[in-house]
Image (cartoon, rainbow, N blue to C red; front, side, top):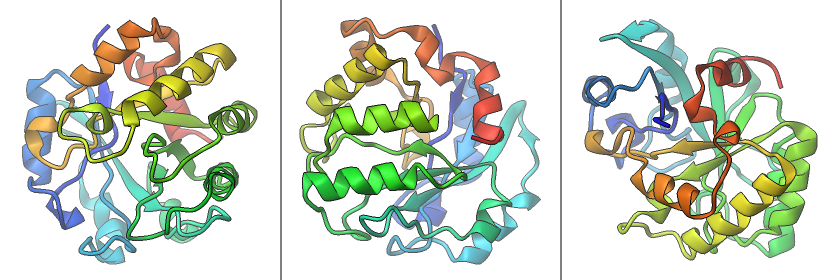
Length: 237
């Protein structure tokens, strides 16, 4: 099946990305995506946009060049209690929130601390996706986080950049295999994200497709393949 959406993309507003929103939309259109989510880094990431930028995303049309545009954010998990740097007032204005652990924002903890952080952030009703939970710099008890996701109706991201040849995340492929097999066992859904920081990576899921095929992961558990999955992204958990 072909992916219909990419909800993890960055523009120059993230500070360390290299393309404009227009360039990303053009790439999404050219690759046949139906939905593009803009999810620039939240305010605690060095170099990213001011909070006013995210407050003003509402000026962007809901459809551009035939592509539906969702306005999101990649929040930073700030501590082992799962607090994020997106306040409720802002989250209410956005379509979705991805929550991720980044070394500039939270120091890598023990496996227990990192696992607790992810389980606690799942209690935030605005968080819809756990971003790139595959980096061994933040070791996790994958069985615990998958069981928590099943209970709390949370989706994990399968990050294409993490398992691409240019990845800087440690042991990401092996960790994704562990995570995906547990998701398959427990019926937990995932979403592929390009994590594009330049336009030509928008909608780039080739490494994901290869791994999904390798482990025979069920298509029904991949949100990108079904437009009905937007009900989860845009609805209440």
